[in-house]
Length: 151
Image (cartoon, rainbow, N blue to C red; front, side, top):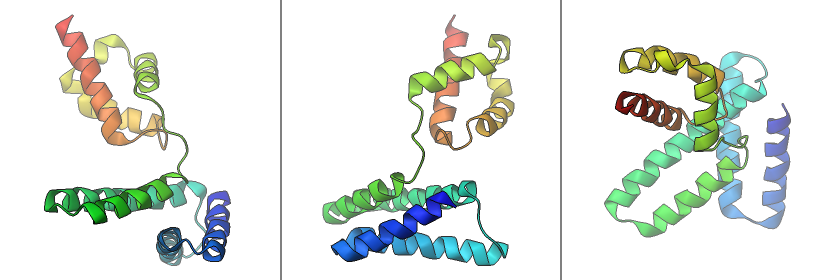
């Protein structure tokens, strides 16, 4: 609920300051949250609100990639601003080194193999819930598996 309250107060601030981009992003995000509340028929937890924010960021990143390929730099800059606005509401992400340390502390070295990748990812996604992007986690895990192969 704390994140939802912050979003609402930030929308009011954006309305007062006349920041059109932030106002549009926050209105769109709050509408998505409201739709999820209607669908759930109840209030959303902070974790559920964070999932909606991540989903919005993912959509914006896909749009960013599409517009980069289409060669539309003015739209690309606007989308980057929207992504930055949305990322303000996510908890800080772990660095690659922090992820590596935590994975090594959670997974015994003998289990680091390509055959166990799916099982390990399933376990690690639950463990890192919200602290790291899953694609980054997969990349670190693949690097660790490759390092073990080389040794």
